[in-house]
Amino acid sequence: MDSEKKLSVVIPCYNERENIKVILDRIKSAYHGPMEIIIVDDHSTDGTTEILKEIEPTVDRIIYCEENHGKGAALRTGFAAATGDAVIIQDADNEYDPADYAALVKPIFEGKNCVVYGSRFLNGRRYEKAYRENVAANHFLTVFSNLFTRQKLTDMETCYKCMSRKVVKKLVPLLKEERFGFEPEITARISDLRIRIAEVPISYAPRTREEGKKIGFKDGLRAIYCIVRYH
Image (cartoon, rainbow, N blue to C red; front, side):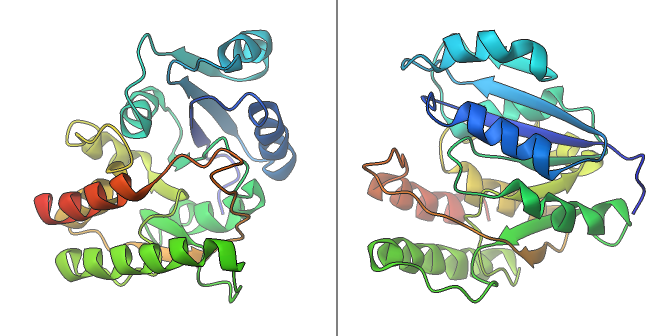
């Protein structure tokens, strides 16, 4: 793997006061190659913005949105600002482990793949009962998406999507979804470019709605709509 190639970490952030410093520390501890960290604050209202202004000198760039538009919109903004050879999405909620970056970015830096997803379901883990409904929903959406995209994914809804910068530049003007419809849309857009998406197993520590999980039933319905719309 080329140690001189740079990874851009794009973090969409909305009301993550308790988590944003923690995830930044985890990123810096886990990945030691050339890296830039770009945070997009999607008009947080819980004090996150004030924390970000305090820590702004410790990251490469923070973009403050004047209105809340959603994860998809925040990611488009972050993608447009990224300058790395590869770009990875990192949620601010501490469910995903930056220790997996090396495995995700390796096929891209070695030129074997240009898009790699991190799958929560290739690691053989059985998730707690409270999360099994989400697992079933993720499985359904992934299988449904595969029917349209002809991919062979096990986890379309994963946060960890790692792409070469060339692919990201092609995607930015195509992406339209503002919220969580981003996940099936970007998968469809990548598939339209005739790119085969590779997967690697990742670790995952799901949080509950009480702990701040934001995605819900309506987002699942939107995902179904997006799978059909963008195929």
